[in-house]
Length: 345
Image (cartoon, rainbow, N blue to C red):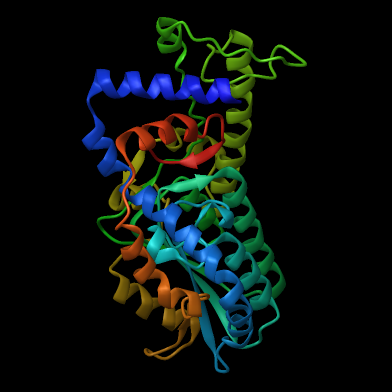
């Protein structure tokens, strides 16, 4: 372990000296720093406020007819990735565990009349995208209530995938959507390590056990293995779109080359149902839901006690800075190699 840490430090020092990009990386990682420190503050306060927050969530559903709004905002990822209730401080609002629990609650809530997905996301992990989609489909099957989606500035890849549970999709005229596809990103430092005379030694049980290591090139066999995983997830994605948009699978696959579509292009391709601003979309949805103009839209988790501290923690966290060397080392260690993603880069 100490040897690997030493190797990483040597590499990042060389990178720092050669590229001279310390200032750029410092700016790039400011948001990440805020996320990490906000997560630390969250952990510190979770014991103090956790029970109150849970109790409030259980009692916070409206007693009159309401629509539940789920904010699919930011990267779709597990809740333990720093999202949770500190959404504002961490720069994203997606909370997977909360939304899964909320949908379960809504299934048994007679005052709920439907769900609105407010989507402003580049996508995220394959697992979480599909799990939420499946839960939404379960909600529709058990309650016979509608699910609608409104696309803000972007609704790409996993964000679009989740929206295939929607009966209608509205999009802002400046929205970018689509990016129907799958990606696995790998980072390779082999040439740099060779120049430094550094080797990573992996003792494995099989020739493909260390597949995707940053210190080794992929073999042809390993590329085929990863491609097979991507292809399988791609077939799942296009099948979901074909069913959700009532389009032939051949048509979907012609559209699903990973490209991003404008709102008008998406409408012409039948990937969405209409283009309008948020206020007009809500008015249309209220009519479909049979609600008044001032109908209540319930946003789960938005009024929890820990949210009251999120903006404060975000400001406090920005006061402490890490050195460029520390951030470079994190960049080397933190690349999420090999994870299947429905994500628009």
